[in-house]
Image (cartoon, rainbow, N blue to C red; front, side, top):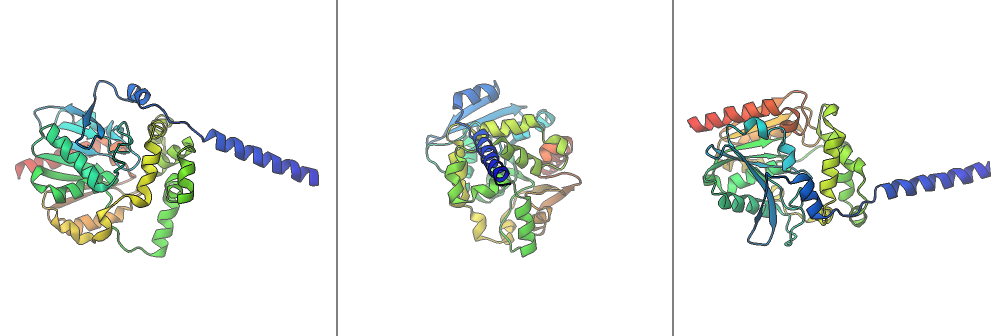
Length: 328
């Protein structure tokens, strides 16, 4: 019996060591990932602060510009299903925020909301967009509505796709449920003890579980897309950049309640999946109750990524919204 317990203990240690080693990945060189995922559509803008921003300028050059902003740990590739469906109706600008996608780590180490807004501002000036529509998913929605507060005269309209909002009081039960549904990798990133370890230990499971938590239809959580999320995270410097956002990233949402949305003066379309496990669909009520000119659409059987899970429906609603804004 003692011998069995001894061998069982050794086997457990071996399995644990193998699991850890299988989750350890070295950085991937930036040039390698740019060659794999960049392509002819990819362009780069050098900001005044030295940051090199990856973006794409697609669609119809003479049509209304539409700027797309991805969410946390995402990239402009999150919109890959949506862009072809709206390319004939808009000049579509998508970009990778600092720390993510093919932009990756930036020399300033500034991954604040304010810097993300500055990226959008500089890119819009660089491309001479004039007045444009802005659409953001999740964290990118938070960047978008804050841009609308800072630069209302530059916008024709605001589109929020399962957007982050402001912090509101939650019951213990709500907080516990949200914690259970949060991807494991995100929970680990909050720990200062784990951060150093996670700059090397990044198993594919993190990407797979994160994607699975984000979509309602699990058939959409493909290994191909999970591998893309995983590889882009491994770009040299990106893991450290992403980890630095936990605890140190400034976010003005902590200083205001939902009443801040009353200052959004541009027409707004809110799209949210009813089955969103990342940002509860109930949070959309704060936009609906406070933004003066707003339309809210709730998609049945859709999770956190409506532009990926329901691209045709999202495209149709964006086109209808743009027509409404144009008539105004």
